[in-house]
Image (cartoon, rainbow, N blue to C red; front, side):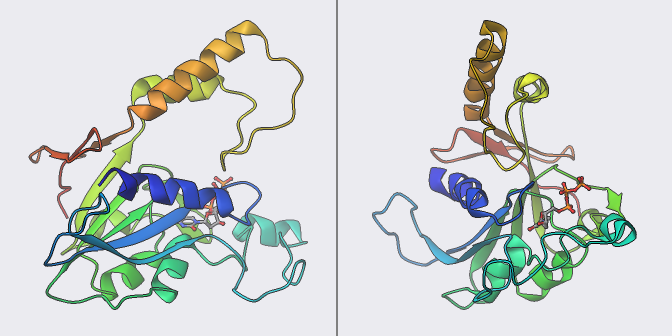
Length: 224
Ligand SMILES: Nc1ccn([C@H]2C[C@H](O)[C@@H](COP(=O)(O)OP(=O)(O)OP(=O)(O)O)O2)c(=O)n1
């Protein structure tokens, strides 16, 4: 189960978006157990935010050229991680099975109905951009989504504090080329790395809490 949370974060590094990498993985709970460390879970699909499949380098502009357009939507041609995971699924989503989506950014208002319509029963995501209205992409519908169990991964307060001081890190996990970092920054990055290990799933409601086996994370359902 530990790999369920790690895989979307690794996928996010493959992004073609220069600023934000988003990874999404869909797992389903099968009837019989496997011996690959994921228990009864099997992979349904995965994706990351990227330009349409088969597109050539430079075929789509990275950003809109007009400033006005940029404010509406920066990366108009990028397909979201969840959309890619749904489009390129290798297994069909079966009504009788528990299917879950793990995604490293809160699903946007366009993705929410697609996820719901695909028959996904649980969404594990982060609080990144949750509840925000950012012009063309807004993240307001997720909280009102009914009939799907929602779980929020939240960086621990230590990780949050450390990341505020971790200057050289870019949002998609890349590290800018820098000279020697001062000792304080190195210590801060070390704290960040350690704190990242203690990523936890935190409920936003007063619902019950339970442990995800082997993951060291705690999850709780969100009220719909
Ligand atoms: N659930 C989501 C949310 C976003 N994305 C992708 C689409 C874009 O490639 C990238 C950035 O989306 P936003 O416009 O929301 O965010 P930024 O954080 O880049 O913008 P801002 O600087 O406006 O905060 O993430 C995604 O794949 N899946």
